[in-house]
Image (cartoon, one colour):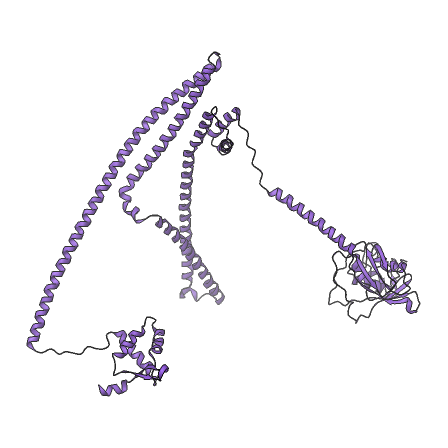
Length: 599
């Protein structure tokens, strides 16, 4: 039998409280084999629930399941569980890295051997510090064993079968704050922090972009290779970076100035290629825009068809045959389709508005006249650029010819195969130079022709503008003549009306009606509204109060306008002064019922 003799029920309950099912040596559950009549487990020797090897931190106990503790018999003592109706013993907050527990309530006759016997089954103990006042501190090797030791808190301990007070006590187990535990925990945290920093550094190094390759130093051999690379379109970006670095380092001198000039000239020749690539990309972008607009228009047409389907289904002829749930779904789908259709329609209209904004009114007016001139200007500019590039290439060929002549002059005493190759290269370069000169002359002639056509188109445009201006002036003169004719006819009509009026005056006296104080229908409406308002205010109202009521109906009403209207109708509205001194106030009253008698 082991160091602890545990009754089967007590042992199983303790194991369940620790969150571990009772397991035998074979690894099978032991509860089905338990025979209550025999009073012990069938087939195996009873095991200690705190035996090393079961050293796992117990799962947190559920608050709904009550904790049941049983009697535990040890070799030299017996542990009695606390009253299950009492609340669980209180503990302090667990310190970080805690491996030390405080054990209080020990019997006065307790020894370190007894403490080792009781708590040694929880795990390996590294140190026991016992005091003379019935308590001690126990330091375990692992943090997980501290939770097992806390399970014994609240148990009453009795040494053997003695009933002496010195041989009994109530255990109180709690977390203890030890400097060694804190130091080890801090060391472990620092180690984890170092590992985390190392992992982050490795990750940053892995994600960091690679460094650019180093720039080679200048030499005659590298210069020759760089000249070939600059002429290659695929290697140009890398080669021009090397050329820039050499220029910034100050590698240019009088001996290699021609070589650098040739490389710079070759770099300049790539401008034309880059411009053509840019125009090609712009063309592709315009084509993509047109394709997108066409596709969007097709999608919008299909959305229109779908919305038409929903509208046809919403008509009375088909709507009555659907159920209530189907009608609800159809209505929801129709709203969603209309929202999506409107969104796509706004997007298409936005694209069209952007295209229209790019075309100004001046461009629309001058488009028929200046189309030929713009084409000729663009062609002339292209010819100028080509002329400049040919001139640069011609200068480069001349520099190469001069270099070959210098090398040929230096190596003149030594006649060999190199002289023959130089002479062949020289002849080739001369032929190429002649061809370039002919092409340059041809381009100049074409440029002159284009300039003449441009001047001619500009003259035609000026003539058209003059004609348009003459037409505008003629139209203005015609309008002025029509205005004068209308004025003459008005004068004749006025004369005739005066004659008629004079004849009427001679025939009999005219009836003169007095002018009306109400000038418009709007003022008549104001009079009616103000009369209704003042009729319910028998003591009158100030002009500000009246205007505040009228401004609720029309915010454009002016207090001066209302006051002038009221003053023009003395038989309908009467102004009175109320109050004394500083409280003097002007009030308007409705007196239409008295005024009708006087008028």
